[in-house]
Length: 278
Ligand SMILES: NC(=O)c1ccc[n+]([C@@H]2O[C@H](COP(=O)([O-])OP(=O)(O)OC[C@H]3O[C@@H](n4cnc5c(N)ncnc54)[C@H](OP(=O)(O)O)[C@@H]3O)[C@@H](O)[C@H]2O)c1
Image (cartoon, rainbow, N blue to C red; front, top):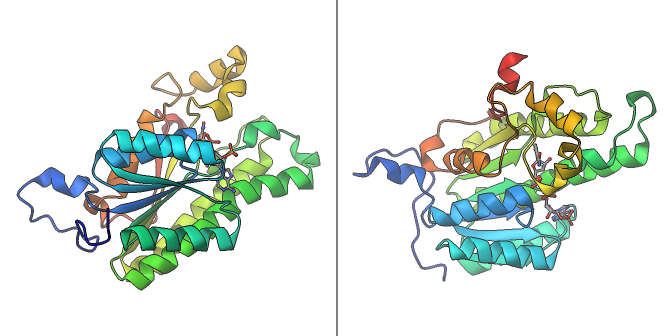
């Protein structure tokens, strides 16, 4: 699709359309899914394509970026997969420029790079620096670098935009399982969500986060494969199960749509009621 195809207006809360559900769609929007080759990013990219977005899937693994873009295209969207290391400023700048060249605009960035907690479980008093730095690079640096490049393009474009971060219930809940670096990193992601919301409101850019509990994905398969660990988690969740990627996509669409124009700086728990019990 060229830049001259469907060009929706700036991202506003205009409710004048005859179809009240139109505000919940992403028709013609250009959405970059950072980490879009992963389990959650891939599901969000496909969901966005299904409601009309043009989706740019960014991942550091070429096969995964391509597969995920194909999955999104199959749902009717216009999509492309691009390869980048989103901890690197030059890569982030390059893919934003490629997106602008291809589609003429950038409306949405979803930050779905992250995780890693289960691979580096250490007691708090001895948490090693290399593991700490790796978790921060993966969860915070990637979010920072990708969002800075995207935000500069959104500000220059003058149409506003949407930033959606993926935090975690671990930003606000401790867990007795060696999670020091991850809880701190997700705390930083939630704090940046509020800070960016405050700074970029004047540009019409909203910034929100979703905050899931455990989602049944390969990242956490090993942890959830331990029946005692899983039971300990599930028993604390009122709805009585862990999440699925499908549990996240509706909220992601909403928060990136025109319908959410007056919502910014919010961290939406998607946790089966877990945080309601704390
Ligand atoms: N799964 C859960 O239970 C859960 C719960 C709460 C929050 N979250 C959060 O949700 C987000 C997505 O999780 P997920 O389970 O979908 O993880 P995932 O499947 O590992 O997806 C992340 C994707 O990002 C890629 N990536 C990593 N570093 C990158 C970089 N520097 N540049 C570009 N791409 C990079 C990964 O590639 P590689 O495989 O090569 O690393 C992977 O394809 C994370 O922030 C995670 O903390 C997950």
